[in-house]
Amino acid sequence: MRRRATAAALAAVTTLVAAGCSGVPGSVTPVDEPEFAQELAVPPLAESRVVDGVRTFSLTAQEGTTSFAPATDAGTATETWGFDGAYLGPTLRAERGEKVAVEVTNDLGETTSVHWHGMHLPAAMDGGPHQAVEPGGTWRPAWTIDQPAATLWYHPHPHGQTEEHVYRGLAGMFILDDDASRAADLPSTYGVDDVPVVVQDKVFDDDGQLELSDDGGEPGTLGGTVMTNGTVGAYQEVTTERVRLRLLNGSTARTYSLGFADRQLDLVATDGGLLDAPVRLDEVRLAPGERAEVVVEMAPGETTRLRSSEADLGGVAAPFAMGGNDAFDVLELRAADELAPSPEPAWGPSRHAAGDALHEQDASVTRTFDLDERTINGERMDMGRIDEVATAGATEIWEVRNTIPMPHSFHVHDVQFRVLTIDGEAPPPELAGPKDTVYLEPRRTYRLLMRFDDYTDDRLPYMYHCHMLLHEDEGMMGQFLVVEPGSDAAPGRAGHLAG
Ligand code: C2O
Ligand code: CU
Image 1 (cartoon, rainbow, N blue to C red):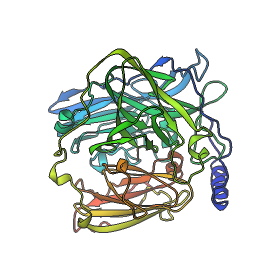
Image 2: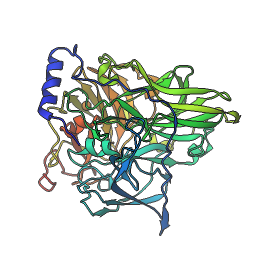
Image 3: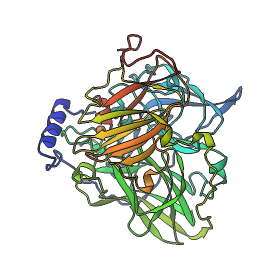
């Protein structure tokens, strides 16, 4: 796969920043509008077996080939990577309270890892850069699901290689259920009226092979082909009055603003689970790594398309996210002539256990994170350096400042946080739910409220980073420990960590 020249990319962004960002990225391919003539591929639910009370999954990262027609010529075999298949991976699904384990086998020719994005779990199970899985190796993390129902996902996180591994196709969803989500009046038949939708963009070279563009454009590769679950120009048959879409922005760089030209949608859940109540919106903006569960109403016999329109990017020139389009279609929904009834989305108030609640007045620690082009607080990622040490049980405010005229996508491992304010103002309702990743508009300050409850470790860190994966790989990442009160672990060199 062709790779960019990193130095050129950085030079380009520096120039743009110096120019106050009036320019456009190097060369941008507008998104193609394919025919919507292929049925949406729905990732299968992963099989599991319960051994000694532990629900055990297995995932094998492997090479394969995939047809991305009509983006490529019919018959073109594009080299891709996937879990248990050629592209993407099965949907893992588990219950709150359940013990789970995953046997992750690496059949690739290079080191990878598998991170459980959005999951609350011990650092040793997190699947970040410190849990590398060597070629031919197997890694078996195990933990207890201890968080509300949510749409999470999994993807590789090898140091400096995450963009390429995800771009080649390694990603899948991890759905969590609980009593509250089951009792909610939400469409819930997987693949029928509860549909995972992984949105990604790609560039193909003349031979129909995947390419990461090397034009130095920010925020990374913006592909001219947008696909859902690996299907280009996909449609989904709808047989019920309402359908729930579990949207995941699985792109490496592109931010989408997803909605319909002819109707609104009900946002029911953000990254970490259900909102307090459904929020009716025209569109929902998703930066790389973010998820949203939305419910869409359909009338018998009609067709509509989920599309991405020129998002309100918060002062970013549109080409940086849209690649020159005002709007492009992503997925067609085709309603049958008769639709089975669906309830109106609703759920009771007591979906979170009382102990889950975060209160600003409990905050005892404030940390600040300044993000520029590629550094956080002036530093690039160093696997041998601990940047922050948090004490278990303490409520913290992370004040995250995007200091440049370009966006970022800020992600924290292990927790779901609450967005308290954006430049001092209350966030819009779509950011009021549990979040683990948030789009950072240029030159704004986000105050995030979080608490690290448990899973202390004086040695192994969790990550925080930009989820625009070129940025992450080029060093926009830091490491934090969660320790017991009274621990003497401190930020700085950590000689016992791999350098
Ligand atoms: Cu989705 Cu640290 O990553
Ligand atoms: Cu970034």
